[in-house]
Image (cartoon, rainbow, N blue to C red):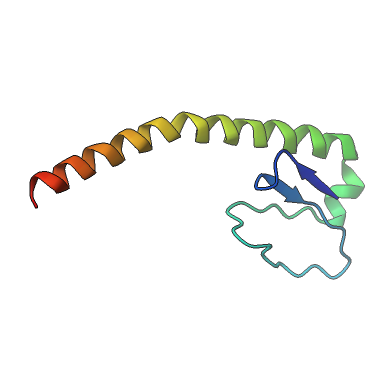
Amino acid sequence: MTISRTEKEKILMKCSINFVRETSGGDDISFLFTNFHTEQTYKHKFVDFVIPFMEEIDKEINEMKPLVNARECFVVEEFLKNV
């Protein structure tokens, strides 16, 4: 199952008996839910965990973008002064 907000912002949820960790390209965060977790927890609780977590990460990234851009401008200006 894939949960997707945009083409670049999505997660892939797979069910596997023999779990092998593999990257789907550019992954920075991964979770491992074992059969123990699925037997002890309802599926909607997983969704209730994942969705707010992704929203919080998205919020933090969006808050950091202007700071990174401002830092980038400062660094470029300082570099050009020294050239």
